[in-house]
Length: 138
Image 1 (tube, rainbow, N blue to C red):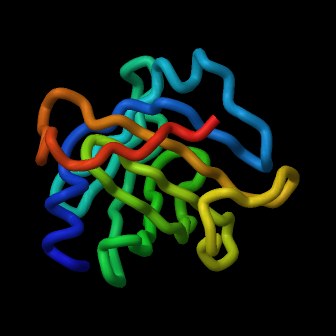
Image 2 (image 1 turned 180 degrees about the horizontal axis):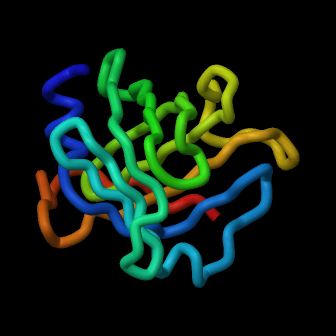
């Protein structure tokens, strides 16, 4: 795991939007979902309840990078979720393939298996508020 990448992900991220298999997640899901990275652990919360947890690794270059979640709790327990991530300013984009290799771009066609989400850094840690912000995809 690259130390730089892991430290940049550290903190709590609030979901802005997500899509699975080309279908947008309901606004209610985005409004109440957070992703938190602490050390080498991660957890996903919905309405303040932990719905998934485990460890993560960043096996490659951090920009854009690859990420692997080793889920130990929740619906993906025992699975390794391979994906890609892009971090700019206060936004984090992640794309997951289940359980195949990570997607090659952040805009898979509708119907393709996978999960994509955009998160905004919570106020707990802002790395560089003057860095360029990613536009939030529609």
